[in-house]
Amino acid sequence: MAAAPPWMGKVTVAWPAHALRAMRAIVWRELFKFLRQYGRLASAIVRPALWLIVVGAGMSHILGFSTNPPYPTQTTFQEYIVPSLVAMVILFNGMQSSLSLVYDREVGTMRLLLTAPLPRWYILFCKLVAGTILSVIQSYAFVALASAVGVWVPWTGWFLALPVLFLAGLMMGSIGLLLSVYIRQLENFAGTMNFVIFPMFFISPSLFPIWFFEEAGADFLYWAASVNPFTHAMELIRFTVYREANPTALWVVIGTTVVCFVLAAIAYDPQRGLLRRRARN
Image (spheres, rainbow, N blue to C red):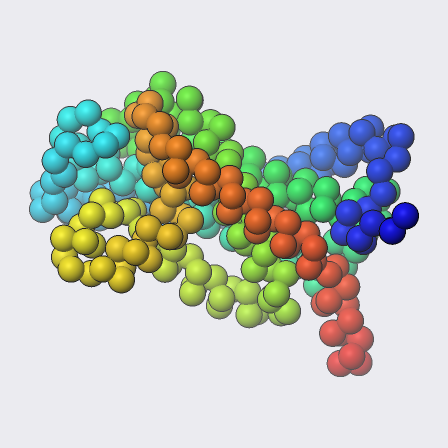
């Protein structure tokens, strides 16, 4: 019988117990590290808060949206962008978590984690889940802030959207994980994110409905936004909050998550940074 690929690892009788302990340890490690980084939470909240308070206040007197799904009535600009900014929080945190993966690979931490008697893909999945939990925590912190500054927030819908927020976090983390596999240096990763985060955010219905592109004659931007996975994650959040179904967005998010994670798990090399340093020496 052919041997399993290295990324799959071996499954033993004690695997479930090891898996649970590893998941708990990695999640708690990321949570404790996050709690010690006060600036990380502040930056995650301040960035969308500026969009909501400054940009939202200015644009609310200029732009107005008629009734469009999933909104039952005419909505204000600030109410419209709250789900978009929650998706922004998830996007930035997913990429930041992937940045920490590059750092862990550079300093050798991932090599230590991968010495555990568990498959490589599962260790990466644990890191992905830990980053997603942080994304969900920051998302609800921002929603609470939006409510505190007077923007109407359907709290019942946001509680129902918890699984969707988690799924969106997994998708963004998987995309970031796939990018981290092919970026060889920590310095290059930060620069690359500018060519990923901002196009994904702006070429999407984050600030206005996607049909605005079509009405403006920007067909290329319309189709680019239509195939943008961030668009579907954002719309899935938006529709779920207002108790509407969006099966297309759901399947796109699930499919993107699975494809990106599988490709990343197959190609991930924990010794890439170490081998490069040895070559320089």
